[in-house]
Structures are given as C-alpha cells and as structure tokens.
Image (cartoon, rainbow, N blue to C red; front, side, top):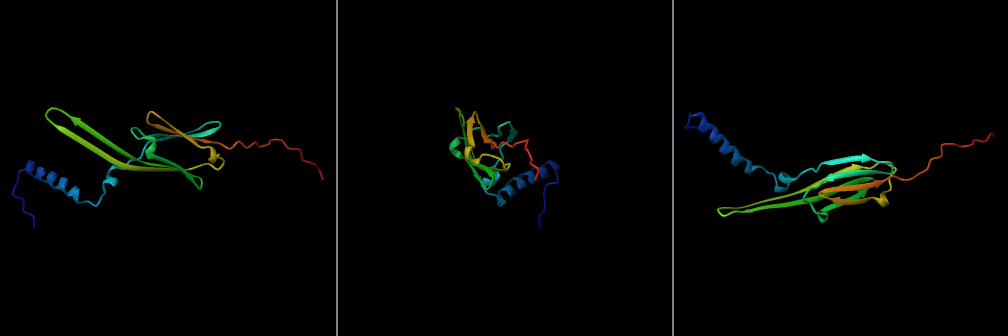
Length: 144
C-alpha cells in the first residue's frame, strides 16, 4: 500500500512526474522502436514516368536500399546522427539511430528494368519509366 506523506498538490505533482519519468524506462521498447521514423514521400505522374521523392536529410546513399520485388517498390535504410557540442564549461553528445522502410505497389505498365534513382540535397528521387506500348486506335475490320 502506497501512503503519501505530502498533501501539497505541487509536491504530489512533482512526485507523479518523477515516478512517470522512471516508469518509462521499464517499458519493453528497444532503442530502434523509439527512434524509427517514416520519411515524407511525394509521388507524381509525368507523361513518360512516375516519380517518387523521399525526404532523407542527413542520410547517405550508402545507407539506403531500393528494390523491386513482385511489382512492389521498397525503400529502406538507416539513420545515424550524432550531435556533439563542446563548450568551455560543458560537453554534450546526442546520438540517434533508427531504421525506415516504405513500400509502394507499382502500376502494371512500368519498365522495372530501367528504374533509376538520384539523391540531391537530402531528397532521393526515384524515376519509374512507363512502358512505351503503342495502342492502335484505328483498326480496319474486314467483313467475312
């Protein structure tokens, strides 16, 4: 049985915050779960290709994997950041690690063999060419 000795609301609120803060360490979450993130994605359709733009600031191209399997495009990778501050009276390091994965079902008439990707200023652009299939709109039908 928990007995509170303080009746001061400010003290109770402080103890509740203190207990909540330390109870968060008891959760069964791994560090990866805490720092996973979902990058923002923009998609657009052009005349000859589909475009997928993914915001990946601070992530090098070596840390990103792009694959197509059974008409599903998957972009996955990891993020590792380290902020270090050295001042005269203190020293601080903050490190963040995490992984991400985004998947998209591709339209049926795309040229999977010629998909290409480029990265510029933290934005990854994936270009998915459309298949250039000419459909005849006129046809002569013979009478039998």
